[in-house]
Image 1 (cartoon, rainbow, N blue to C red):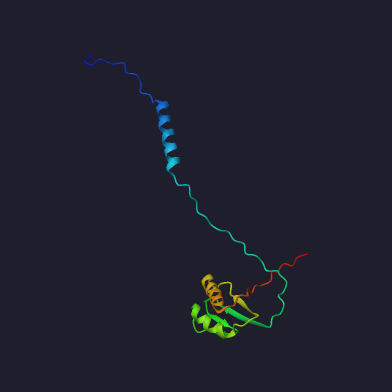
Image 2: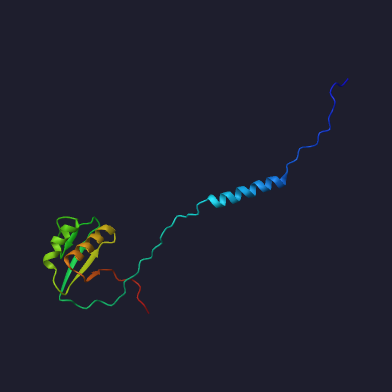
Amino acid sequence: MQFRRQRNTPEPEINLIAFIDILLVLVIFLMLTTTWSRMTELNLTLPVADAQPEKERSRLIVLSIDPRGQYTVNRQPVSGQSVGDLMVALAPLAAQDVALVISADAQASHQSVVHAMEAARRTGLSQITFATQASSATPN
């Protein structure tokens, strides 16, 4: 004896058209709300200095910067690392037709070179050059 009647129920099926519509709306929403930023990184290749040697000047002031940021002016150590300390050291040497040569170590910080340039500007030294190392490759 069977008390239950069997019903012929159709198999459930997934409505793909509605599913595709929902996915399309989600993709459009995500594309509109996403921020399209990427990490930027500068790959720098520094230039090599193969210029002609500079003509001799009557006076040169050589400002050296070591890797720790210590300054020397014409081989005399400067007592501090601030712009004011450099100005005190450069002021007596500043005169007309004087060129400042900044010889910074490759490991010296950018800030220490900027301090040197600022001190030179404040003392009136406008002719500034940077000491570089010649490249090992010779042009043909």
